[in-house]
Image (cartoon, rainbow, N blue to C red; front, side, top):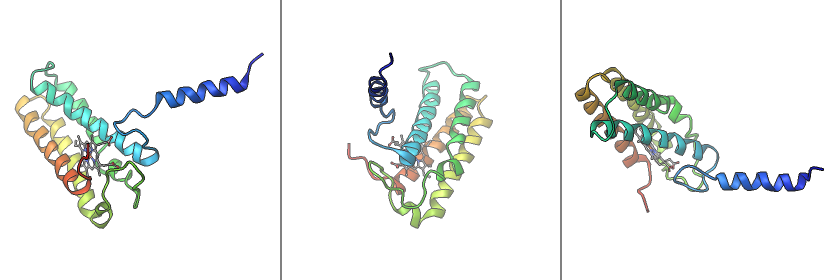
Length: 152
Ligand code: HEC
């Protein structure tokens, strides 16, 4: 006979053990969703950076794929994960996001444009290098304005 109480305990344990995948344990809901999206961006940038540094073989398809992943987490897809006042712990988002919403959305759109440039130039290593630099600048500009400085 099945012991439902035991099964319940096991599956709850599995959920707890599988835990948060992002760097921030304890994030839930929309804060976790946007942190995960940012994590995808970081992975995409890293993957292209590794190809440019010769750590992995250069592949135009892989660059274009990363550009697509960036686009999928930029623009509206990014800003919709920042509903006004969503500052649940352990967020690093700053309240300035909502007093300077136009600037925030402009940077998110800029990232979409940068990713399009990356995609278009994927066949050319030099173009990829320039495009990746623009992307990194956009990430940095937004983080400097709208993300709390790292405490760890
Ligand atoms: C329009 C603004 C904006 C842009 C553009 C942006 N970010 Fe972020 N990013 C944020 C904010 C705000 C946070 C803090 C989110 C939070 O903690 O709730 C963040 C957090 C992060 C985090 C930490 C996630 C975590 O688990 O805590 C990483 C990694 C990150 N961004 C990478 C990137 C990369 C890489 C790019 C560029 C490809 C980028 N971001 C572009 C605003 C932006």
